[in-house]
Amino acid sequence: MTNPTACLLIIGNEVLSGRTQDANLKFIATRLGEIGIPLREVRVIPDVPDTIIATVNEVRAKFTYVFTTGGIGPTHDDITAECVAAAFGVPWEPHPEAWERLAAHYARQDPPAEFNAARQRMATMPRGAALIDNPVSVAPGFIIGNVHVMAGVPRIMQAMFEGLAPRLAGGTPVQSRAVHATGMLEGTIAEGLGAIQARYPELDIGSYPYYRPEGNGVALVAKGTEPARVEAALGEITTFITELGYVPVQGEPR
Amino acid sequence: MTNPTACLLIIGNEVLSGRTQDANLKFIATRLGEIGIPLREVRVIPDVPDTIIATVNEVRAKFTYVFTTGGIGPTHDDITAECVAAAFGVPWEPHPEAWERLAAHYARQDPPAEFNAARQRMATMPRGAALIDNPVSVAPGFIIGNVHVMAGVPRIMQAMFEGLAPRLAGGTPVQSRAVHATGMLEGTIAEGLGAIQARYPELDIGSYPYYRPEGNGVALVAKGTEPARVEAALGEITTFITELGYVPVQGEPR
Image (cartoon, rainbow over all chains, first blue to last red; front, side, top):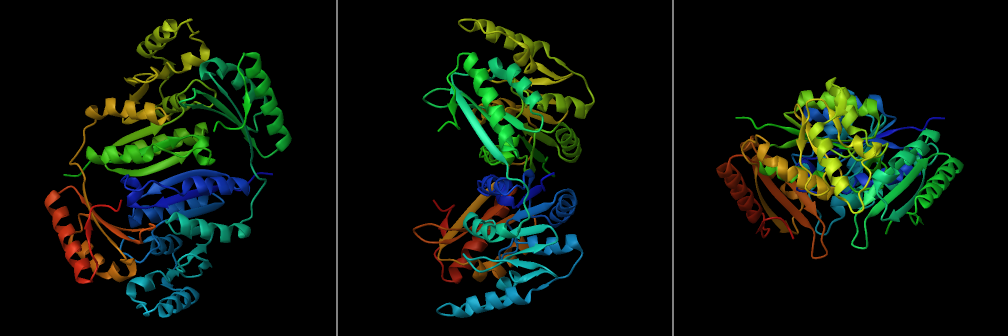
């Protein structure tokens, strides 16, 4: 059985300009792996309507799930919702439930804040969108088709994702096992490691050098959906590097 | 005059699985902005030959410059160079200068290390490639056409980029000016800010909420290639938020 796949679109000039360090990719990648929806591609794209529309349409046809972060606030550069509507060819219009939640939220402020045109944009969505709850700051994300539109602020995005996760139809969780050895060189182990990978074609075996004050080395990681095979591959890797004279330590380096 | 554009390809399963936090995007985005080559798109793609080949061909046709990070080490999952060769339709073959540098490097070790088949892969490149020096660990990156292939390890990538930078034909550097105010709400300023953006269509005016223990607020950033226009827009923004009763502070929040 093949697992579903996912693509993440990070929408925002601030990541592309280097102003903001993205903090969403790693979280989403890790959580998706845990629920058996491997992340297969990420794109970071600017706040440019044609780019957003074309990219959404390209990737929603290509992957089981699409997640987006960014561009759903109240300002002029928050154009994700209207671009997703355009991508799906549906009207971008007030969403009754989102409207109600936001109107109540602003009325509840002391003193009450105005539910003005800018804030109303956050309740304006593609027709047919289903809401993604926002327990942090109320303004919801939404789902249309296989596209899941979330906030860019990490704390809000994470809360949205956790509310969403039980509704995602995942596959077999991806298991990951690692071993590392300080002093090990990739050039020494490459051939033998390649031979092990060849015997486990359904696994991803990765080799990742690390550089630490305590000493440089290499971490070797086996990933796959069958725990017994992941275990067996890690055993072969451990034996192999032990025979080369290295001292394997289970897990990732600290 | 329109600036050249750039696309970054981050190649590696370890970023897509959430194992590794990418640390290259922000550096490359910032440095490219400084030399007037705005980064317009980033893709994170897996170590899958068809995906790498198709993506390289798509983006090299679309952007002035393509930069890649990752996948140029000696192990079986380091397949960037052969995939780039396939994308360009040229042989993947020993590069005499790279071969010489690496052979000398391993001979120089005490005791000498073997320049084995795995290490020879790091000297195997698309025919016609020009080398990118690696002052950290010798194994070079390379340039073919408009594609610049660099290491994934941040320290090595940064050294490669700095060696490369003087050879990149940049445009007008992008100027960025910021102002922020604690207590400010996006929903309050959105309409006026949109009006300012409309008067400076050639600039990117961005609005970025921040969340700090000392207080939440919003940073407003004006970017563009004409310093006088950036300055003028920032002046209008500052006046506008002052009139709303906020206390603007120049620059980004600490």
